[in-house]
Amino acid sequence: MLADDALGRGRERIEDPLPQSYFDAFNSVSRDPNIQLMVADDGEGRVVGCLQLCILPGLSSQGASRALIEDVRVASELRSRGIGELLVQWAVTEAKARGCKLVELLTHHSRVDAQRFYKRLGFADSHVGMTLRF
Amino acid sequence: MLADDALGRGRERIEDPLPQSYFDAFNSVSRDPNIQLMVADDGEGRVVGCLQLCILPGLSSQGASRALIEDVRVASELRSRGIGELLVQWAVTEAKARGCKLVELLTHHSRVDAQRFYKRLGFADSHVGMTLRF
Image (spheres, rainbow over the protein chains, first blue to last red):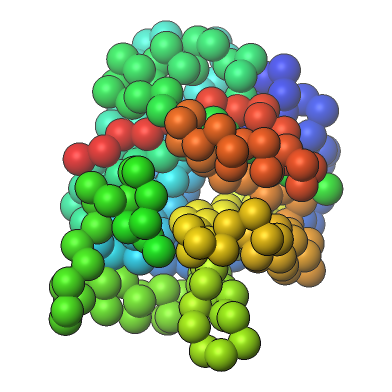
């Protein structure tokens, strides 16, 4: 799914076997208590959606933790059926339960549908998301 | 410094003693090996700038970690002297050293000077930064 969109296609290397770097990253994520990788499955064991939630302590806003949602993906043939909404609602609920006062995310300017989706779920397009890629 | 700008003023509680929540957050940040709080001092022990750098493992981009810069602040009377630039350059160098392929940050739409500053340092305003505040 990570490679299954216009931006991901050029960034991923989907081969069999997968490059070791994916397994290394999965192990790092698994070890980090502040990062959760959540998947949606179709009831028959097939992963049809995913997102990554990071809980980040910080000093600002009276020492409130914030949550960062990254890498939201839904299988292309199953979009617009509420799978992404379930995943993001889970992330928001989890962020609240862990004491966060803010959930934030960056979405590429070109992902206009995603921006509409997040606004529908209550997010504001309040910030500029700036990136530096090496 | 966290309270010393238009947005921070309404969000912080600067009292003596500081609310316990700031100390709790500082302890959480200190315990997390993926979060670094960097300060600039004026050579006489006074903190004149700060930022928080988070290193976040993740599966996308072939399992590349990304870095998130948060809460960049410079004492108001010492702005435009390169302190913020030193801090951000440190964060970018550290992110590279820790294997990140991407540094990202959100800056409020109203912080036009900040956006110009980050562009000068090579950042692109490629994303929409979306937030949900509780």
